[in-house]
Image (tube, rainbow, N blue to C red; front, side, top):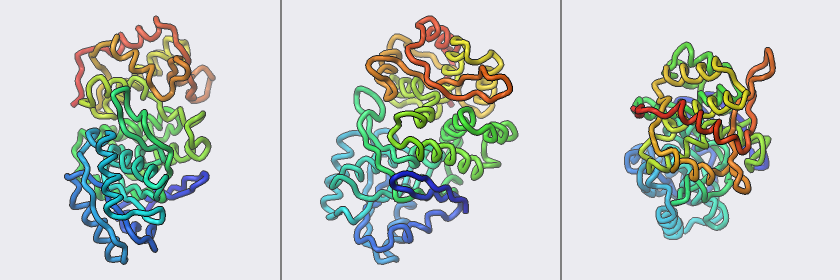
Length: 359
């Protein structure tokens, strides 16, 4: 079993490997009541969590929410609060989220706001959830204005990434999660890129890739829990990616949109003189080899105002995480590019705009 410790004001462990969910009862020992939040397709996994807790003498009950991004609404969050009230959850009780990134975001937000904060244990069942959504304490729901604009920082008591859950994950969902893994490779850990060069599917080295990506995120979160500096670099590829998700009404998977966002960010950095054509080609070639989209056709005029609602925006300024590769002999490092020239943005957009569609 692999274990990554996340430091900070409320430290916790991310446990990675087959059977990691077995630690649930240990993490919540002594708790009186637990709500296990899940989407309908994961009823069996949630039922196993309930049984594990009940066997340990904890009163646990499953609460069902919609699947995918449909769960991340104010109406669904209100439904969870009503369920917590019906179950009588108090500050000494807990919530367990079993599912992908949408469920961990939603349940974490509901836990953060119920009685101003109850413990949350994240049990992610997708690659995306294991390497990104469940780790770091960011929780949230979507609004008409954009993705994750309503939320709270609420570190979990633990993250139990049971890799057995990935066996039945559809290939498209697995690839989508790998977009967050390759992102970590570009911004911080070249070892991830080496592993994906050997096996672009990520299937051969899944546990090591997940651990490496979690360590990248854990280091950033420990240094910057509230997303005021270094943690922003984890949003590489996300400014355009989130905008694509929003204008497509979440018809694109998160990782698919981020994959296009990575190419866009690399092209933008080239326009700014920070990366070379070879650097951009490195992005495009690896992302394509992973089976992720590198092109997107859409309405550039619609995407731009949505990007200005991105969480990294400050005072109306458009800010992008990009890589700066100008140091000879050194790996490119992430930085923030503020209010880039419109001509650079248009050129980067032209480089990704095409008839390509996700698969």
